[in-house]
Length: 355
Image (cartoon, rainbow, N blue to C red):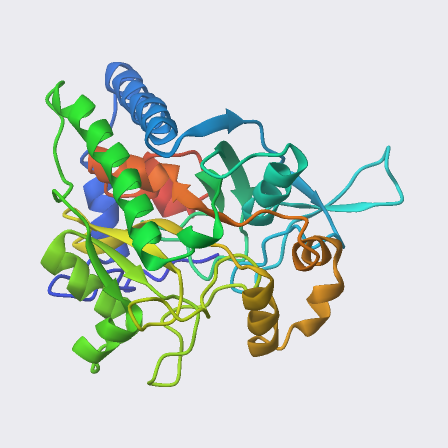
């Protein structure tokens, strides 16, 4: 992957080129002492937030896989074009495996396997590789580290009201983590509360802007925003963003009159002068939404896969879940200017030399 030095990463009122990013990173050249302090701060963020998240959502930490067997339907297809890293295991020659993209469907299968009840859920420390990222940037890396969580719900909770309640609980965990850093002289870059808006309403508010420009505009205005209804086609003819058809429910009509029971949590990052997506989450598909979304995506053949059959035959519970980017949470709470300062990834030489 080659970086274009003239590429703009933020196109609101301020433009950040790759060279600008590198200068920001270079100003933070670390000694041994500052390196150790920095690593301890990262660990504090991760430890505190995972504890807070478990408390607020009633989750149990569990171990997670890094490989998924092909042909089961458990692999997360993300936007549908990403190629997974294929792995052959010498001791199991008759099967093929892939490095996971996320654990969206594995978590739901696990909740069913062990009989979790409504109100109970799990939290994983997920690691993944996404070498098909369109670009590496201050916000995008091949190496993915996220808190992947999933919680069993009942039919009455398949609503935007419950989705918003859950988002507020996650945000409360973020604020509590921020407060623990502030006690040690850290910054407080989070807004006091989350602003909610549907992607259709956002498009109507800023019809002249692209979806990403809308995200920047609304997030700069409010500081922290949850954009709902991502994956379904808007009135303008395109979705706000692409979602796979078999995890989030982006097709059900909500009680607010919009389509979709999912969304993205974004915060304004002062250093980047840009919106930073911390989480993608949602109420998951039931059998009706799965069939509808497979048809809308022209992927009806996936209904025959084992995982999809389990859902269609009532063997999987109704759930809500999502992923929360660990490195991005660290970036926001420690106000780091590049994701490479929050994780060990692979980067072009210019970025590596600036670290």
